[in-house]
Image 1 (cartoon, helix red, strand yellow):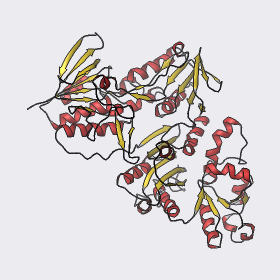
Image 2 (spheres, helix red, strand yellow; image 1 turned 180 degrees about the horizontal axis):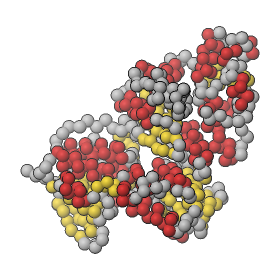
Image 3 (tube, rainbow, N blue to C red; image 1 turned 30 degrees about the vertical axis):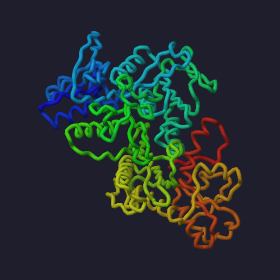
Image 4 (spheres, helix red, strand yellow; image 1 turned 90 degrees about the vertical axis):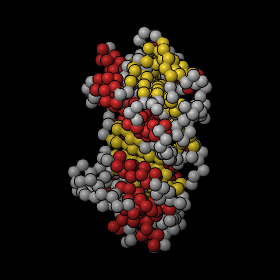
Length: 566
């Protein structure tokens, strides 16, 4: 017996649910409602229309209603908004947005995929400025055409998340003067403060006026006023401070809302009504590592949820293992990927997890090969189990494949010992025989087993102020080019001959370019009777990236004679 399925909302969640439902049954009636003009579009590609990378706005539309009907026999109704749900009658009220006409449709199962809406807070003076948001093709087309038609030069982007960073980058590439404003101490929440400094530097170097740790307090004519009192010239503002789940329809229908303010669903994405499912940005999901429900507005999880909903409707048992939050962003010449937990998330969610961090900066391929670039890799793992909890990778090369390996490792409960032992593809143009992931695994297992002690980049400024014993084990020419102020140069090649210059009665901090040579020096000293020795995680390159942006934007006193980013 055929069934009737109604889907509210298209794009990743709704359209994927509809397509999967059709693949599982040819007999059922499937109707998809979308209040906007486009039912299926590439949400993640929207910002790239601003720079002309995606030349035509129409190219962002992936599937038109007539194609849905022809290929899938799915009735996709655009400009049709579901405004009410009658759970008793099992029917919805739909309004045609172009005419105002209303009608009803009954259902056997209802799937909600309403998405999320851009947050536009009621900031003083906002009614007097040109404000744009970026959530769909209409939004991005309006923004692109408006700035061109009005000859707008100065644009402020409020919010340093995925959308904010991508919009800022593409507006800058299009030739605009761009200011990116983030109220928090750093952009891109999936990354910790230390890693985000690499992105801060890239933004700054590419000419974006990046302001962090400063909130918008008001708008004046063509001006953004910050809490610090600073004023930014802006003929247009793009609001990208985040999204709020579209729950109004669910709330009106009496469906349960979860602790995150999103629609509450069970392991099969059923709402509190057994005949109504929900997927995508409007729901809360189980974070497999945090053990808590969280919001995760990403296309990948939405599509997986969609498939599981369709499978469950058709009686297929699917195990819900939760999500871990894999993501990636392009920031000019750098690529940045993350997965799982980061340090700030562990603290913000008050997770009772004892963890340690392994940070490495090896080359992303064999150094002799053209295009070899440093890859900043941060691994977070549990102590004492060694269970992999998360990773962040930033570089000019292939960060995605390294983080994808970690995502897979997390999925299967791997430990740092497993990372050490992984057999990964190797050829000089692609990587190294000991890949970045293996390298992180080696460092992590050494830390886990107490082979050595470390300090992080964030600790170095205080150590310099205290006059701590910092020894730079790079060669003399490297040291002369740039070094930590107050650091003594004893190259690794000379360390055994100059052992008498290294004190035993105070902590000794060893540093090189990327922490590899200094680790070798540490192990040598350890075997020679030194106990209070520490390796500086990330080395001089890590310190340079960590210090640079704050140095150049605040004018604070440097702790290095010069920076070294290579």
